[in-house]
Every structure is written in C-alpha cells, then in structure tokens.
Image (cartoon, rainbow, N blue to C red; front, side):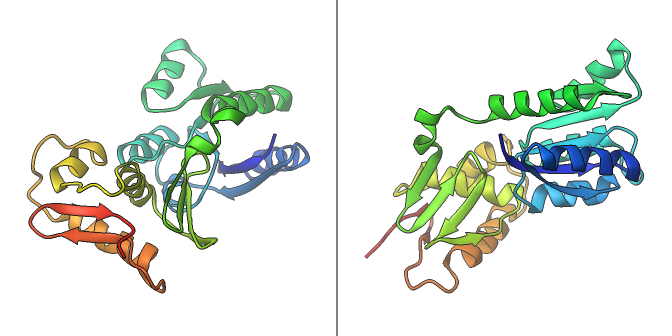
Length: 230
C-alpha cells in the first residue's frame, strides 16, 4: 500500500521513528511539530491520512482535528496519545478522529491501523473511475482529493476542494448560493457575508486563469455553474 501521510508530532525521535518505518513500508511522509502548522498543512496539502499526537504545542491534537473537520477537511486521522482511558479514547473519536492509538505502541500495530484506515477511505478498484469527476479538461479526483486541468495540478484548500467537488457533481446546472452554503459550509441560515463569492473568486482564479476556455460561470441573479460552454 502507498500514500502520502502527514505526521504531526512534537517529539523528534518519535517522528523520525515513524517516518523511517512508514517510508520502508512504501509511504511518503511530511512532518510538522505543532498543531497550528499541522492544521495549515492539512488544509493546503494533499494527504491520504494524518497521524496526530494529542499533546501538541500551540494547538492540541484534538482541537486541531476538530478545526479541520469544521473547515470541511475529511482526511482520515489517527490520534497518538499517552492518555488511554475509555473516556480519553471517546474524546478523541468525538473530536473527529477515525482511530486512537495509545503510547507506547509497536510500529507493526501503527502500520496495521494506517493501512486499515486507508482501505476504509479508498474505494475498491471497480469504483475508482467513479471517484473521478470530469468537466471538459478538468478532472476532480475524489479519492486523492486533488484536481488537475490539462494534466496540471491545481492547489486547493480543503474548503475550495469541497466547493469544486459540489460544483462538479452538479456540472451544467445552476448552483445557488443557498445550496452551496448548505452543502459546503453546512449553514442552514444566511450568515450575512459574501463567503461564497469570495471562495468562488479564488476558485475561478485557480481553475480558469491561464486557460483559454473558462469553466466556472456566473449566472446573473441565480448563482454559478461549472460548465463547458462554446
């Protein structure tokens, strides 16, 4: 099995131990040592899974995972912690973690849990193609949570990817601001801000700038549409 993993661990020796073993198992890893940087990396990078120490400087691991989930980030998360009571594990899962491993741990158990989480998160081979949405020369890979246009990688934050995914699932159809607030932000009220328009403007720059044919269109008085228009 392969994939890109984000290690958020403030103990350098533990991080190096995990990174070495995971590399030998075929994984690519990126490491940071505090919760705030971890939250930023999780939102900006393309990762298949994050391994998060519970006790982190700046922002603890559970707060970091909770903030990631609130922003729409659904990367599977494995929490590592010396706190191992039932209540501790329940707190971790309720914060948005997908699994909880108590320190000290064996690397074989860590690897088994990583692989189990990745199997759970990835579709089977027959469904792989269904996990890709295409609009013209734009491809949205739902499994890898990445987007490309004409083969060029488009760097998207977690919210931008969720917005693009929703637009791509409804390609050639008008999507209203209310629909996007409900489906992407989980708002069931008007927040009284231009949050949708700001994110649409950022997304449009990323997927359309430098390409001859625009794909993200404003439908005046109605909303937006992701469409190939001649």
